[in-house]
Amino acid sequence: MMKILVCVKQVPDSESPIEIDDAHQWIRVDDRASYRMNRYDEYALEEAVLIREAFVDVTVDAISVGPPHTATTLKKSLEKGADNGIHVLIEGNGYCPPLLVAACIADFARQNGYDLIFTGVMAEDDMQCQTGPLIAARLGIPCAVSVMKESINTKNTAITVDCELEGGISETIILPIPSLLTIQSGINRPRYPSLSSVLRAKEQALIQLSPDPSFLPVATERLVSISYPEQLLKGTIIEGTPEEKAEKLLGILHEKSLL
Picture 1: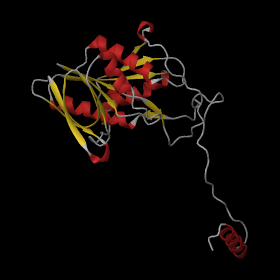
Picture 2: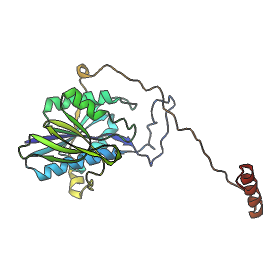
Picture 3: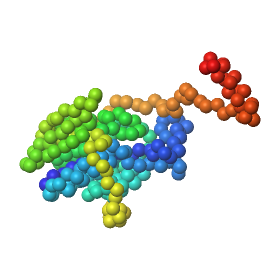
Picture 4: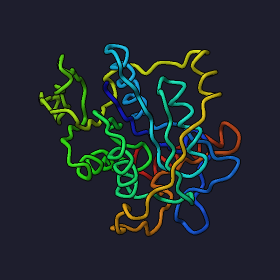
């Protein structure tokens, strides 16, 4: 039997209104805030489901660390093919350091003996690329990043991966199992959930856990503040009749020495 754990993260939907809270510590969480699964994690989940379809006796679990509203993303994982959803519940809606997330996931993975652990190559909101390698380090297992292709040997004892490097270069690595892979986008095409999967996910309960304080690391970083990007350019709307607009436009162009 092979067990695969896929780490998924809930991120703010960039197409919904995003406001910074009054303390400038994180985004404001209210009825207008909308969340979804990190797109890079969708590729990791799809790759795990493809392995389950290609081999016999494979289970795929999805895990996420976060506040109560994270459950909606785990439900989406069930719709997309995960067998189980594990929610490590933490209080508060603020910044959660990668080391804390990695410690929670590594503790669960250690107790449940997974053969493969997949994460997305990065999270869309902070783009730190740290959680996957930190999980591997805490578990003492090998790790490959930016994986574009994978192949498991017939004995399920090793996995061969092609990793994306800079400049269009790739490298091929053979890793023993258990190991951890961070999955790059483009490795597959994430599926749309079927109606039967949506109905199954709706009825299936999530496994909810609380982090074990004895396994949590000492905080090594602190979020000082977040802010909106500085506006460097802005447009000017010219009012008036066509003649007035043309005259004002000529004045602006002359002022900038463009005419």
